[in-house]
Length: 156
Image (cartoon, rainbow, N blue to C red):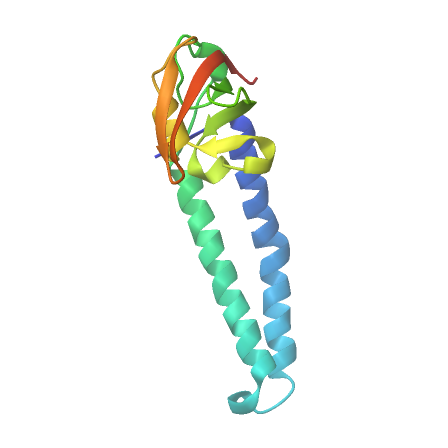
């Protein structure tokens, strides 16, 4: 099961529709075009088009599975007392005073550029269940970091 926001779910559904309605016909057309070029046993273009189609179909299957297992969470009904999935957490690194902010999301919605980290990352795991004012001691590949929780909220 994958917990996500309505926005994240809608984004996955849109991506699936794009793949099925646009990319799949393009892949079929590329195969047909390569097939028309003659002998398939020595046709690298045909092989590449078939491989690309296989990868596309695999991605479509994976997206369908994620969408089928998705559980949409209404963030307006969540309690901001403790860090949980879909929490927006304001943090301060105790050692260097650097401030940062992350939203804890499902693996499928994770995007570091947008400040969204997977619930399965060491940082997210170390923050879950903590309250504002607490310091989470988190083991990361570089060692141990201490992050103070400054605020917890939910994006609408």
